[in-house]
Image 1 (cartoon, rainbow, N blue to C red):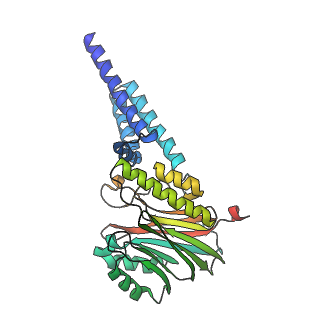
Image 2: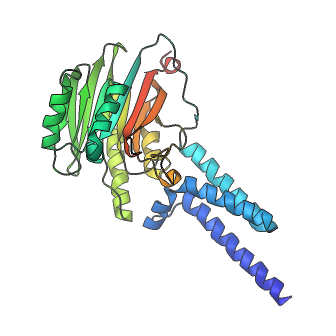
Amino acid sequence: MKRSLSFNLFQYILIIILLMGVVECIFIPSYFAYFWARQFAVQLIFVYLALGVLFLILKLQRLMIVSFLSSAAICIFLKFASNPLLIPESQVAGLPTFSVSLLNLSISEPEINDALNNLKILNPDVIALEEITPIWSDTITKLFTDSYPYKTLITNYNSMGMGFLSKYPIVKIDTFYFEEVPNLAVKIESQKLGKKVNIVGGRTELPYSSSTYKRLGNHLDFLAKKITDMGGNTIALGNFNVVTWSDEVVSFLTKTNMVDSRRGFMTTYPRAPFSLMTLPTDHIFITKDFKCVQFNNIISNLENHLGIHAIFQVNKTENE
């Protein structure tokens, strides 16, 4: 009898621990540990599923039910916090496309030849570059002058340099700062689309505490206000250092009425060992004037993540 009571108490303690994991992901307090834990919500789903199967084998019915329900609850949360369209929208034949590649030069430096070859193959209309130093600025200018005659670059010796290379005329450039962190916006006149496209590049600082997460959220709110003032036909991109389902990004997408180009959970290193543990933190968001018909990670031969690439078409449904 005493042994049975102890075992039941142990089960209830495990149930409380399992439910606390769900609370961390969905009803998140303002503590750094909880901010960090939410990043791994997708991985936590698989942990709960594995535990559910284990408890099923051990015939622990209460724990099995709680595990499976916890997994389902996080799935529902992610469905509403991420892009619900798991399959890319179909490309309409005859309708022009507009493509953008985002490349981090600091990450790409050890494998720069792979990065440049990927860009040549992808042949995007616009290349967005992060972490541009003065040395990189000269190199990039020489390499891409013929293919991308229009450019604007902010060079910096820290990680905040950025810029755009474009095949089409850049008719407006706007640089705005959030607490000394530069953000860059351009208006590009696309002859293919027959309209002007706003592209906004931003890079938030890596959060390491509750206060830096709050600062990151304020930075995205600052960008959201700028984008809202610009109007439609807008693409926002950059390494925001948080996942799509984070409170900060969900708030940003709600305020700007934008959607994520990425579908579902696409790991940053799709073919690398333990790829499920990697987190997608670089993003390309679009207003609903566009639809994303293709999204790819830019990967080196050594399976390292170099950037992302997306192709868009005008969303006829939104423009009718």
